[in-house]
Amino acid sequence: MNLSREPLLKRLPALFEIPTPDAARARRRIEVMERNLMLPVKLFFVGMIYYSFDYSPWVGQISSALDVTVVTVELIFWFYILISVLLAVPLFAADRLPLALLQWIVVTTALVDGLVLAAMTLITGGMDSVLFWLFLGLILRNAVSVPPGFSQIFLNFATSLCYALVVFMDVRITANLDETTSRALDLSAHDVIGEPFVLRMLVLWLTTITCYGVQAFLERQRLAEEEMVEFAARENQLQSAGRLAAEFAHQIKNPLAVINNAAYSLRRALGGADIAAGQQIEIIQEEVARADRVITQVMGYAQLSEGRVEKLDVIEKINQSVELVFPAAVPTGIKVTKKFAEHFPPLLMQRAHLSEILVNLLQNARDALGAQGNILIEAVVRRDHAIEISVADDGPGIAPDKLERIFEAYFTTKEKGTGLGLAIVRHNAELYGGSVRVDSALGQGAKFTVVFPAKALPKPFSK
Image 1: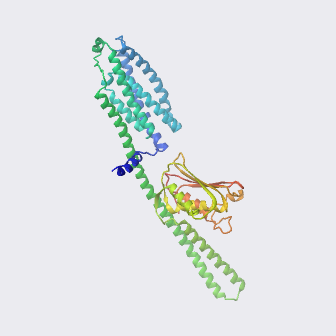
Image 2: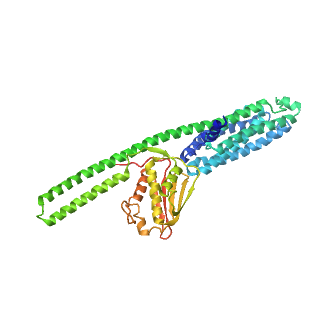
Image 3: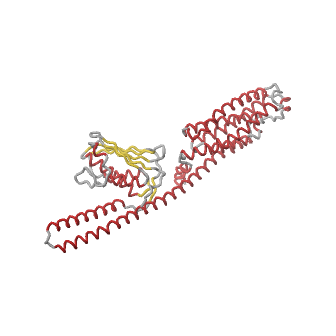
């Protein structure tokens, strides 16, 4: 029984993990909730509170502990108006503010609203105040405006603690009021904090957890739908590219075959009568054969229509590629060091395409080092959720005049190289909207960096 429960307990935190929403969506949620909805609501309530302070009969009538509290809250109210104006002004320039600053403003505003609501709850009945239900509204508001995660949970629990502070102060104040004051204000004494308080705190905490759980469920559903759409789009795009390449090869190979047949017939017709013409025809046939091989090779390394798009684990694929290029059973003087981030979003691409990229980069680094040297493989997730993989070596480096051409097909600096390795790397990366760059200097090694957008459709192909 314990063994069956343990995996479930380990998976439980993962069920509530929510990827950080992209900047555009987070900014939009803040604008809609804080600027378009909360500002008019707060303006309405501020007007009501202002009216109650100026015209309500209980202000300034009773010289007691409650009177001191009311005066204090009135001063806090004016301070709250000042703070609210200062925090509301940036919301009208939300498009031009950094998202981190905008989120900090939202959290600060939510904390201030919670404290002021606590003060108003205290002077309108304390534990019995109907304003308790506004704490639920604040929790729902925070769940929309604040990104899911520790900050949202902390803020909502802090909001519930504001209500707990109200109850404790209510008990202390009512305990110090004389009987005449209590009757005049129709206050019921709360000598102890009983079951109603516990139930209301449970309601606040359950609302906090429920909001987070619902967001986790909806976010996972949204991500699943986006992945389905992206899977279909990538596969359709790759198949379209494969059909385009096949049509290209067909359109070129057919004229080449006609030219080759015509040259063969012409050569037979001439026989050995004209040696010079025969040599020219032979050159034509050789060049036609060479062009046919180039087209075949291009189709061979593209392989666009083969395989299927999968959800790939970046670290797993890197480790597999390292094992393929540097088998553990084969001794080598090359030291491979890995430096990875902790969490990676899955890559949606064909398994063979990613393997070709990694294997080619590692093989190039190995060939550049020769018998011994160091290779550093790094993988990180950038702020825009793109995945960046780099392979660096401390080999001889690349000459400046060759840097601009190393990604060209059939350009190679090796004696037995095909010149297709880095061309494949760039081709496969760009196929998924990614990019590849190189940083190198003679005597300082070389570093190749490939960037894959985690959420980007493949580049469109046109005929």
